[in-house]
Length: 301
Image (cartoon, rainbow, N blue to C red; front, top):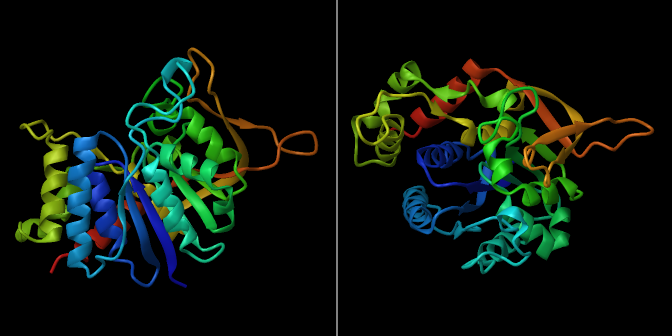
């Protein structure tokens, strides 16, 4: 079965690589939309590159949208209105894209904060009937966070949005830092991608150049390993055997001064909560890097 998917990304080389990898899976997924959320200038560039990539693959009809530019609730509870410039059009586009898919069919792969998805689900609760599931790169349970000691970046960026999504009646899969902390583009993996760079003008060549530049810091850096976590939701959807995990009830700390953004697993059972997420605990990192590498190399013409 070919499943419609929507990629909810943040601008960057990893997002471009994730989109290119998704385009190599025609028998598994059908792109129903691509969103980019973040700083306006970066989003504009990412959207233009995504449209060009989709055009090259004969998918000009796939919508590319700008998502929410900021969190649902301003930091420190300064009011409850949307932040300046937050017109909700990204959420409206997401609502339209999800509603265009049959019931219980579309999966949303979120590689960044959940602001746009949460706004869409608040505006249109009927979306739950169209969603087959949501796969999220986010959370940290048994490892330190990468935003604070206890909070992972995507959850901490909009804790209220994460709480909204986890509170909706949709199947959620969390791919936390517990899985992805070692899922990185190291020197060996980058060398394996060298064939992508043989034609710099091609789609694969441009993505390869972006990955190289990001890893080198775009200024002659020391080649630090580049996080590949943004690609993990796509891999969890199309290659679930790479992962193992368990059902759990996950809450997001939205109020604590020192614990805001922390993801907490609550007890289950007769006196506890019902599961609201599949939490992936382990990833076969080498195998996952191999799958992503092979998908990217498949784009080489």
